[in-house]
Length: 457
Ligand code: G3I
Image (cartoon, rainbow, N blue to C red; front, top):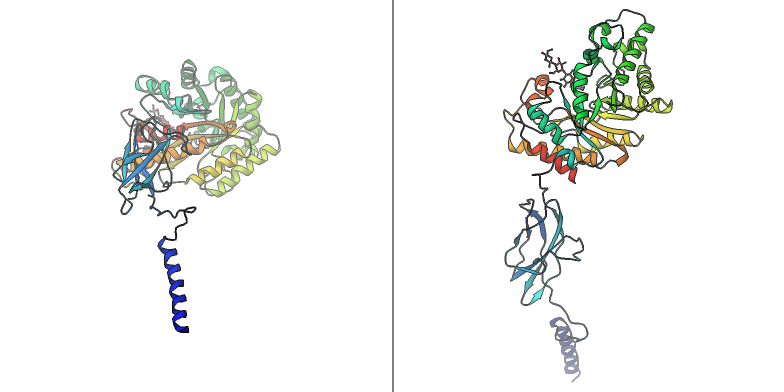
């Protein structure tokens, strides 16, 4: 008898347990939902100016999906026709969109009249409409410049210059070896200001800024200065007079100057052993900066150099020099990062680091000679689409880094040339390359689009 009772109790307990798992023990107050697997949304594909393809992973046994598209990250509003849009496939083209605009989408699974939870949300930005944009028109709070030559200011050069650029730098015609090629009595008319004046007048006539480049540079020093036989005191008088005359000649027309260019040895913390160092001493940089400011108190004055991003010794020496000028209240307004770089380096972080070292000193940042080699290892004989897109991405990255700087520290981004085939890099490296925004036929390249996208994002 006892055994039978024990069995009955056991059967009763097992029944309770089975009821609970089967859901028959349903408590009307707490319905047990049969969950439907939600999809995982993927990054958008086929992104264009006015469309993209939303996509998500297929869900096993799903009968269909629902798609939401919104311009609101929280889906507070929905794109017309894209709220709970029934979709049978695991992707959906979304069209009729606005260029350069951010959209969000998410999906749900539907099955037997039930709907899953929302998928993750994906952000996608349509491409900018580049048909009517220009470099300078897309730039906020910065000049977009290029280097020029006095003999190339007409025809297609002129069309692109006036439409695209807001600042000019003389590629070589405002350097000492052009301004003062021979011994001079320092009477104004003995200077060769012709080509520089042509560039400055062209810029003035077209409402463009002019960045002066470069008052003191070991690579553009006329022979009579390099071989100066007079005393150090006489040399100082020659250089001070030169700087004063040039800066005063362009006062009010040239708004900024690279006062000293490339003063430090590569891979070293040493000043180059230039004639300026030899005859004016280690403090020649401070003297030159002061002379410029004395000649034109309004002009912005820069130190300019290359490879500050990867040459840590040069970088350390340059910023120590700048900090010394600042500590002594020697006037300095900005630093030029030349940025003669490649599609694969230096990294975004390396570029950012130098720019932030400049802004942390409350100085202006000038990406002063930007070109991006597409063929640094000479493995290409023509610019492939793949490499063109990689170069585009690097231009976009560089511009985005600059654009993210504080407004007060943005001076300009200056390209070192207009057309690929006229880049100094071709002669310098004696090999094919395509480093600039326009091709040899003055046509915009992918690189141009990358620059614009960088300005817009
Ligand atoms: O246009 C004349 C031509 O008419 C003449 O027949 C020929 C021979 O004398 O010279 C031509 O001018 C040359 C000019 O480039 C244009 O090609 C100059 O001699 C030559 O000195 C000049 O070289 C320039 C170089 O600086 C030196 O001033 C490059 O164009 C220029 O891209 C380069 O730029 C430097 C920056 O100033 C500083 N950072 C590095 C950068 C590259 O070296």
